Image 1: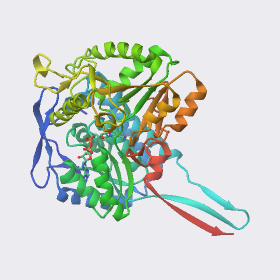
Image 2: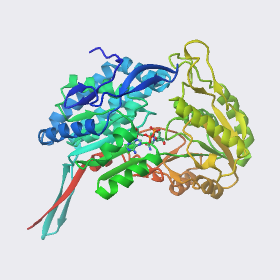
Image 3: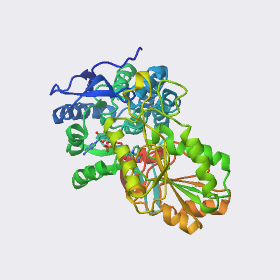
Image 4: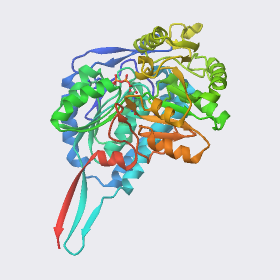
Length: 485
Ligand code: NAD
């Protein structure tokens, strides 16, 4: 199989690759160069209708395949992702702007892991049984829901797209999926892989387009019974307002403003290295990045000087070069948003300690969207810069003197996705972990992922959990059967 990025992306509906019914396309731009390099379907409700029809037609057969049959196909998809690792990594980097080494090391391996994890997971999935002594026995059936919708964002394109699709298919559902219109290429290449892997027609349908034009038609479709969404809190709210009155199952993985809490007794070198990653990996465009760095007063100055020096050395550059620690911001729109946030931080009285400016590399990438890693101090906990998600290479520093103050600062946020805690004191690690209002806590590490664990946030970071059995439970309808003895 020879995967190459086409000039014109097609929808994948009913097993075949087809043009959008309205004939409209969106420019697909490489953010590292600023140049248009392909066209993405600007699909609408008519394409979604076709996709839902194909998915409904495929459901009776797919939902009754054995776990072994589903395992074979999903595992084959994982193998084909691995076999096409380099082509997929290049496509991801050209679409998103992230360094090629990162696409190769993280995004593409994780996409095949997602399929492999749920291919094997479904073979071990079991349900509960509750015995009422000698009166009755209850057992729970977990049946596929039907047609489900999966909508994903641009920051980890194939990684997050497959994180939803794999458990949905494993559980026996048929899927109508939409990747971000900003980064559609690897989702398109996945359709070619699914065809090659022998996934039956209509089981997975990938419709490309914008949120308002295509995503909203998926959310509002009465025959789509569950929506798994990852993206902004703003879009999550809109989706919930449409889907909740229709009583659809909803999994919402939304934004974050995660605290990175550094106590003086931490393993300093490990904390410094990891904090650099948790601040600026993927240009800070990871929902789990620690964008609010909270440092114990007695080491604040030491941290500040060392961190600023290290951040300044993380200059972004051509994502195709191994030497570029950071790549381009995903789009001009997002570049403008992040630069606007930096300007706001200054207006709010913040001091830019490092970065704060756009970068214009020479040569191929001179028209790209690059921003220096930016470190800001001197802002109160309640200002917009510390409350609103920026989703770029921008972090703020705040100091605290006591554990209580650290917790107060951490929990000021309306978000509650993840938190990182740095301390060698095991009792404090447990105490603070239990009290921080976040769905995911890392102690003395960051982004160490075991796919079996519950993944998701509280507060404005969403509802529901992905990963492990949680995702298979989300994508099935539990039905209790009570038999009197
Ligand atoms: P976004 O909300 O703009 O778009 C996400 C997806 O939803 C895209 O496919 C988009 O086309 C679609 N969409 C937008 N509006 C829609 C609507 N009304 N109905 C249906 N679909 C709609 O988000 P983005 O800018 O692509 O991604 C960045 C955001 O995603 C950040 O807020 C980030 O924190 C969040 N994110 C969260 C997680 C998590 O696991 N919690 C992971 C990655 C990214």
